[in-house]
Amino acid sequence: MRIVVLIKPVPDPASAGERLGPDGRLDRAAVPAVVNGNDEYALEAALKLVALAPEGSDVTLLSMAPASAPETLRKALAMGATRGVLVTDPALAGADAVSTARVLAAALRELEFDLALAGVDTSDGVGGTVSAAVAAHLGLPFLSYAARIEPDEAAKAVRVRRISPTGYDLLEAPMPALISCTQALGEPRYPSLKGIMAARSKEIVSRSLADLGIDQATVGGAVATTAVLGTRTPPARGATEIVRGTPAEGASRIVELLAARRLI
Amino acid sequence: MGALWVVGEPGPEHGLARISTEIATLVRDLAASSGRDVVGIVVAADPGEPAAELARYLPVVFAIQDEAADALAWSSVAAAHVAALATADAPDLILAGAGPDGRDLAGALSAQTGLGVLTNATGVAWADGGPTVEMSVFGGKLVTTSGFTANRGIVTVRPNVATATPAASPGRIEPRTVGGPTLPAVRVVERVSEAGTAAPIEEAKIIVAGGRGVGGPGGFDLVEQLAGSLGGAVGATRAAVDSGWIPYSQQIGQTGKIVKPELYLALGISGAIQHKVGMQTAGTIVAVNRDPDAPIADFADLLVVGDLFEVGAALLEQLRGRSG
Image 1 (cartoon, each protein chain N blue to C red):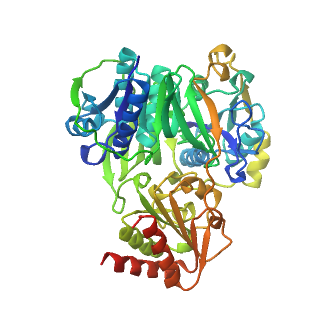
Image 2: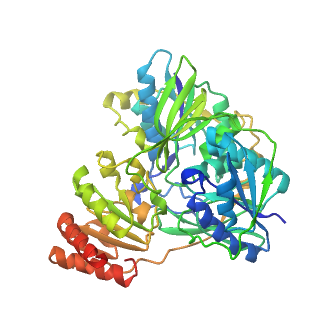
Image 3: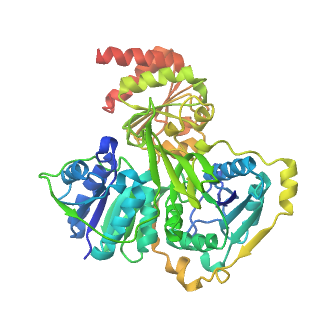
């Protein structure tokens, strides 16, 4: 089983320090980068799948990110991935979802895999549209919002439980396929000390746009389809009223507030 | 001049998703400000009912009948039809919901048409010849207004941005057939409903949520009773979901759902940033927590300091007293 996991370094959401630069783009230098949370679930799922059938199996990380990304990728390698591929090019600064999907699709086209996994969205953009676009570019079956992934190597097919509003849909498609992954797949492992040591010598291959045969003028900020026109700070919430007292007093105050605001 | 399209998404029992009626209501206002036509599009194995529902909100609905929309993953089937139609008719704006189906559709459609995507809109307006989209970013710290460089594109819209209101008179339904490239088939083997999961939590007007402080699956009985009494849905933090007390579908926060209910009642929730980003735009936030210094004290409207079971039980009793 050969698996590619799409990994995006994102500003650490726990830092609460994300901001836009003067150009209206995310300021990636403002906050330390971490592996996007949902991508870690994808990677964990990949590592569990290859562990079931280790023979001839591997997990390749694929990332489109600034040249500083290897630091973040090492953490994902330390979890147990085999190697990394980093698509990096100065022309990609300010790339929108359209460019990103095109570039990731071109990079995936060069790799051999049975499954490509990605997080359902990223904590910086939260758009959640790129993996569907990558699948459409490549003509791959797209199975989304996975809570469980069950490949059948003999049948060259994969079954996925897709979270639905009322439960789940059981989906099936031939491999290779692209799957978007949720937290329901299970908690990501912590890298072991051995894993961290091993990650230092794992290969991270850098690919430029020229390597992928993409004209620099056709992707990136210069041809972005969307632009930030303005920003505002949302009105601050009012002061918090703090009530101490008996449970009945606390409950009464809640009922009063809800009634005053016509919520009950 | 291209029209404004609303793609109707599948809802419960072969009907229409509520988000599509909200977007249809929102876009009717845009029709006036943009001077453009508004069109609904329904792709379904049996488009009759969802198309009729969408036509209550919009003057024209294109109904595309395709058996595959039920037998295969809906978004890939719908995206192929809408992309083919968009190539022929060149709309200026295509809107879908910001939930799983709408996102999957928007991504595939973007790849097929080359149109840009703006996501998670909390407002859509018209300025300088094109749509402008408001989004709440960085966990609600900032609101951005964005546009399309070509003045055309695809937008996904958050739930509860508009209150669904039918038009004065229903629109007409036009059956359409479009041919074009299809996307790879993803077969739906079966659809499974799980007990205890009601309407999508993103659509709920009232959410009662439990966190680590709820202490166990049994603790969610109280959360559920309060939700039932208030006519709301049950939500949870990641800690409660990871502990297996409640399904992932109810998780609110960074790796769960982002919600904007009118009332968010947080029980035993500290309000860590990962949870806060999923709920801080709620209309009214009421918290019950033993710790007066918990982060939620900084952004709740009302914090009742106390034991959530004691306060919750008293609240349940008082709410029942009111309705009885």
